Image 1 (tube, rainbow, N blue to C red):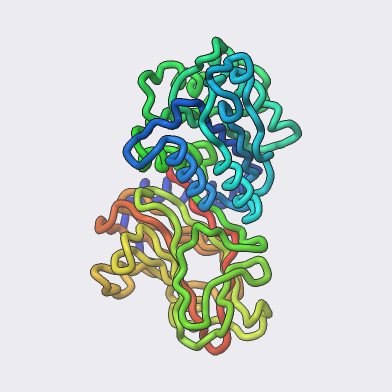
Image 2: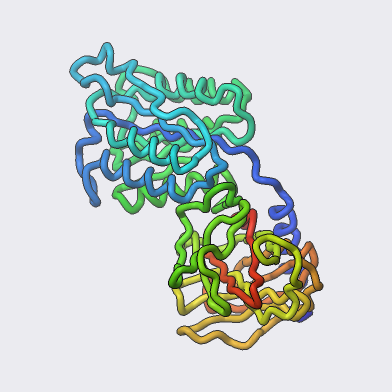
Length: 404
């Protein structure tokens, strides 16, 4: 094994990586509350506020794991602000908290489309009712409130935030202010209810704020267990009749499989900096453990801090051989810079941690290789696999977690 970084920093990175990788994904329940008060017809850079919010939420749904329970609640969308008596009690659970299957994504998107800005801003009343939406659910309970203003119905959202905390059921409230004139109250809600406040002045900032809120609330940047379907967040490159898809609840090559044809998939955001990637890899033809995968000539690789197709860092897995890091600059891969011997097995748990300039890779909880390289300081992630003598890899439990 070759090491290229300071011992203390390496020990910290590996310790955190082991901790994150060993943690099972906790049940996660996220309810998005969308403001549909009459002021949401105003415009910000990127479009009308309500349209900007719809698009940002739909884009968020595309990257959330199917295992998350996700729901939608709205306010101000049924009664006019000229009828405060009804408008100030106008909140509705539009989609109950349930697993984010493709069917549920579509249902939430349809409900978003039907929301039309009309009413007042009953934040306190809405939050009080939202608490009941989490009844019987365990795990992380998260509310993300998107609003373009403060309470207009005379309620006390700060008192409700205190009330939510007093219940002791772990609900945290994250708040995004969309082009607000004053953030004092909205920020106070988030601080009192254990969350965080984010400012958004336009469409791009709103999309980023929603993602940041989820990442901070869940401590997970991305997760896919490939149960039934792969996350629509993956960006894949089908070649001919071959593609990456779900087979036996794992990611694998599907369709017409061709020898030595590499397929890649990428996921994540350019602004990801320090994180841990963990994934399970198993080998076999059509899921059977018959032909051994040893000496596969680096057919499987994991990419970190990806800038684009021509610039990234890769960790290449070689069962029964040398697995190690390579750097791709301007479309050209370097030789292996740091590597270690990989045992002859049919299944592996791979963990790759990147913090600052240090990259570390573990296989089955054993440190295999470390690399110090300052070429890239942020970027998304990906993977590669190919057919080799009718054998191919299956990937499962692909998770990316932030390193604080």
